[in-house]
Image 1 (cartoon, rainbow, N blue to C red):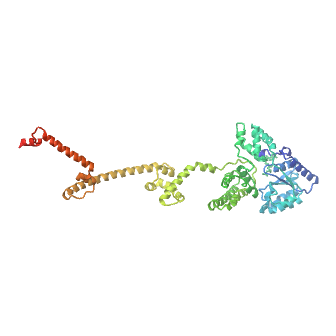
Image 2 (tube, protein in one colour):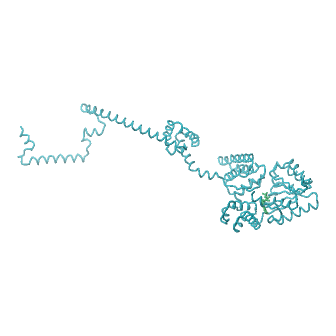
Image 3 (cartoon, helix red, strand yellow):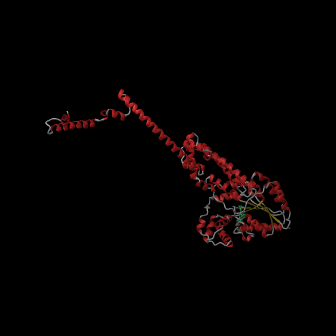
Length: 510
Ligand SMILES: Nc1ncnc2c1ncn2[C@@H]1O[C@H](COP(=O)(O)OP(=O)(O)OP(=O)(O)O)[C@@H](O)[C@H]1O
């Protein structure tokens, strides 16, 4: 059992603080007992978690009344009020004990569906023989003017910060946990007078703990500042059954509306128990998402309020009954999932862009076609190779798309094909060279005969080297020629009587 329920005070003496309210309650019930007839119903009005319902139950217990509760989740239309409250109010219970009727959260009766309910309560209250206690979070805010005149209003203040630590300490001790008094004080001031929230915080911090709880642990609690935090907003929106209360949860929240929507979506199945409630709540979330989409796409910020109302009040009113127990809410896992899948998403986007550019498609459309690629990779090698070559996909990209070790098989085939192609090309080149050589030979023989025009510069050079030489070469050639002449003259001057060497030698033979 959740600690808030387990440690709900059974007697007025155990209710922390609220001394003035207790006195008013005691006076009211004692007057009823003395008069024994019609008595104005009591309306307990105060913030959530300050002990209104607890006080009503504790009073009933102390004065031996049997409680008949009709909470906000019940459809309190005219018939239901007549059947449940009407019958109970004029009769004693089967046990013979008198009944105390508790109508929780009557500020929720201001909606159109409950209009009959408000008038019926007044009617029933006027004829009731048994006492009726109503509770509300803020009766002035709501259209309850008629009801307020017919009831005895008692304001319940939030629990004083000094009254919270003893309650928390007692619970921790009874559960067998050791706690630092400073940590307890911190939880108390975090709760801002909401004892239910304080007990819930204590439970969430202590459950499963082996070492003593310290102040550092409390600091890790989400900030519960005066503006409220997302945990409170989610809790109120999921717990309440009132349109206005649910809608007001986002009012002072310093969070983006999309984030609030994710928080609610994450925690709906934690709070709601019945499948049809969960389905209905998600239906509202999806409707709110449509409006949010319109806000972003059309920049029509007037739709904020519809999105906000659908996600808070829509979700709140999807449940049949209020779940009172403690629920450990958790931040939306979508954000962790998104950050984990960031690299994957970036890769997919880059690939879609690459493929889209090739086939003139937007990356969004390309992504749709990309889903077919893994199927082709697995089943058709030729088509896969064709597509990989066409889209110029790398092995990594194919691996990423197929998510299976098929990529290495395809790329091995591609490599094999490439090698074969290379071989064939080499063969072709050789044949071409051969053909070229034989062509050259034919060309040279024709050239000698006809002196055709030669395009190949190398051939041109070989044919007419002078043309290729530059001035420097010309000069060098000139020097070379001069030197040759000089040498020849020197040779002439050798002891040969002015006759060249070769000529003498040759002369010897003739
Ligand atoms: N004054 C208190 N003394 C001891 N326990 C309290 C007190 N107020 C609240 N609690 C604890 O908080 C729990 C919720 O209190 P309760 O349901 O009475 O709040 P409430 O004012 O009726 O809230 P709501 O308006 O949301 O219905 C109780 O089960 C109890 O454990």
